Length: 275
Image (cartoon, rainbow, N blue to C red):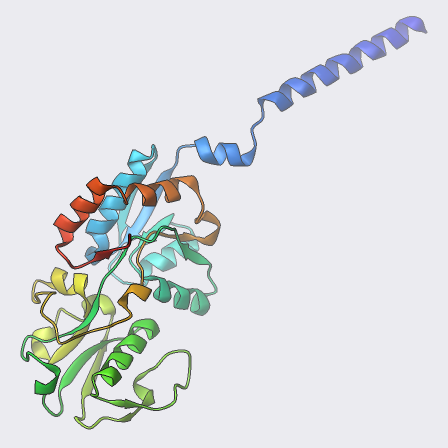
């Protein structure tokens, strides 16, 4: 009996020893997430590719690897992020992605600190002031809710139209109650509004898209949205990843004086950096 008890005790000691060794070798999920190297796929469109390239470089300086995945539609990167085929997006401003979340039952957020914003303006290659726009003037206006809302508000501020009570979350053409110049509207994706500006009298566009079109001097415009800074652009990820070390570190690296100088040299005023 004593021999049996001795053997049982020895077995228990061995089991406990192996358990302690196994526990000592484990790390918490948080530790793993901070040390594990990742390969990050960043979705972008042609107009945001140069800025996305800077983010890619910042991610790689942080010790991870990254690649850009190009899309030919403004909403396609966000759809790919929602579906999990990419890890991040650099293509849309914050109000746009909030609207996308509501319409698509998704949960995408922007990593802080925010990167920059692009002034949103009315451009024309035919006229030098709002007052010179003719009757029946043709405007190209964004077709997404957030950017159409700000376009309609800008026209109201310019006294080109008069708005009634807003029927939904955003102003649309249907909220216009007075249109004395009988302005005509053509809707287009915000990334393409500047492309056909020579075929119309005016177009709404972000400054960097106007610059990218090669048809507009982004610094020559008819009117600018006074609330442009409320439309920040930055790295978009699923909400659960907004505090991930690789993402936060990359955005912080972009704030260095070296990267700020590179950014301003590349974009020549089409974007305004957040401090």
